[in-house]
Image 1 (tube, each protein chain N blue to C red):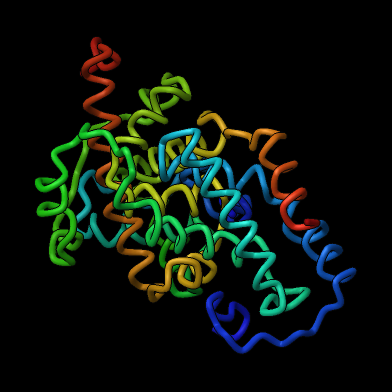
Image 2: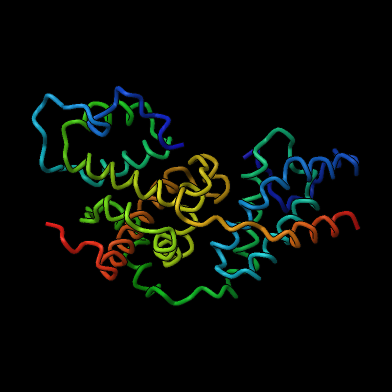
Length: 204
Length: 99
C-alpha cells in the first residue's frame, strides 16, 4: 500500500508549498471530477448526496494532499477517499431504495461458498445488445452497493484488479470473487428485466 | 482493459473455425466463467490466458459465456449514462480551497 497512503494518516509530510498544492490539485485531481461524480451518484443514487460526497472528498483530498505522491495514481487515490467517505458518512443515511430483498440477496450471494456453485443463466447476448442504457442501469442500480461498486470500478471506470484491491482495501482474490458474484446477480437482474419487457419472446 | 488481449490468434470467439469437435457441455463452467471474466477484464494470469487460448475454440458453452460477458461489459461501458459533475460543485470546491 505504499503508493496509496492512508488518507487519515496524521504524519503529514509538508512536502508542498501552497502554490504546489493548488497546482497538484488542479492538474492531478480536478480532471477526475466527472468520474468521481458518476461514482458518487451510482453509490448514493441521489444527486444532492452525490454533490455533497464529491465536495467532501475533494476537500479531504486537498487537506491531505501532502500524503499524495505525485506521479502515482491520482484517480485511484481519490476513488479510495470517496469510497471511505461514503462508508463512513453516507451509507447509513443512504436513500437506497428497497428494490431488492436485501437480506435474501445477501444470504444467497454473500457467502464465499455461494460463489463456487454452478451458476447458469440462459440470458442471451443478443438480448443484452437490444437493451438500452437505462435498462442496463436499472439492473445495475438494483444490486446491493458492494456488488454495484465492483462493477462500476471495473466495467465503467476500467480500474485494474490491483487498483480495485487498493481502493476497496481487499485482496485481489476477493475482488475477483466479488466481481464474479456481482455479475451473476446482474445477469439475473438483466434476465428478469428482459422477461418483463418481453425481450425473449420468440426464442427457442 | 477489455479487448486488448485478443489478437487474431485467440478465436473461435472471433470467427475462426475450430478443427477439434465442439463440446456441447462444459463440466467446469464456474471456473471457466471466472477465467473468461479475468480475460475480458485484462486481469488474467499467463496460465489463464494460455488455458483460454487452448480451450475457447472447442467449447460451445464457453464461447456463449464469452460473448455474453463481453456484451454486458460493453453495455456497461458504452450504454449506461455517465453523469457529469455540475459546474457549481467544481466552482464550490475551488472557492473552498482558495479561501
